[in-house]
Amino acid sequence: MAKTSKPTGRKSRSGPRAPEGKIPLQVLIAEQTVEDAKIQAIRAKTSVSAVVEELLQGWLEGTYKLKE
Image 1 (cartoon, rainbow, N blue to C red):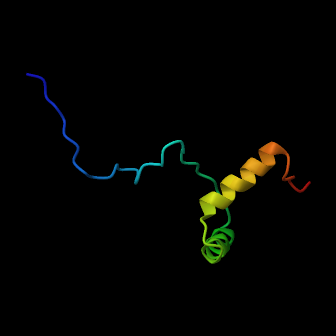
Image 2: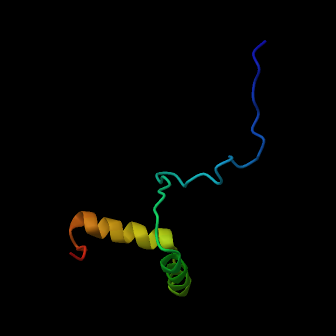
């Protein structure tokens, strides 16, 4: 008889799963910049992930330009 696995209710070893349609992205950013971004995100009632996604979308669409 084949074994059937049952969900254990535990999170994966890599942490919680990403929401539908999202994938994790690891970037290296200066520690102070991350701390400052988290504080600003809290004040703006958003998340650093949302800010990064919006900035990347703007860059891809050409509405945000990188400094030279």
